[in-house]
Image (cartoon, rainbow, N blue to C red; front, side, top):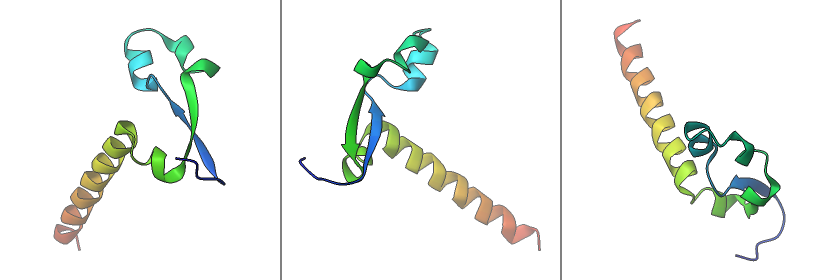
Length: 69
């Protein structure tokens, strides 16, 4: 995108996929990562899944608190 400033590392082949398929060498392989700005990294499927699961977990915690005063 050309944005400058803070960046994060993103695995091209996800860490989860690498572990699941016994290709753990991909996790530390410099050819399997790219630098992305925060907004672009947030648009990756892994980040979007993480946000979705985190929000579901937070909602579940809030619901359970209602019954335990």
